[in-house]
Length: 88
Image (cartoon, rainbow, N blue to C red):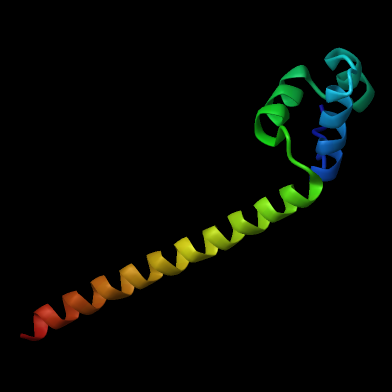
């Protein structure tokens, strides 16, 4: 079975329809997804608007890059300490 990829905007749209009173089985049938997907999305994206979601994604990306920089610096520091301890 082919897996569908929904954008964040589409997910927010589906959740807003659910909050407006549409039943979950009807939404799942309409958009071709499972009940589990709806409830997973609801747990992750509940109460977010599209702009808040974009901001969240940007912050997560920035956090990922900063963690990578810190890891690289720690590796460099460890290598330098090992090099200095061998020389003296």
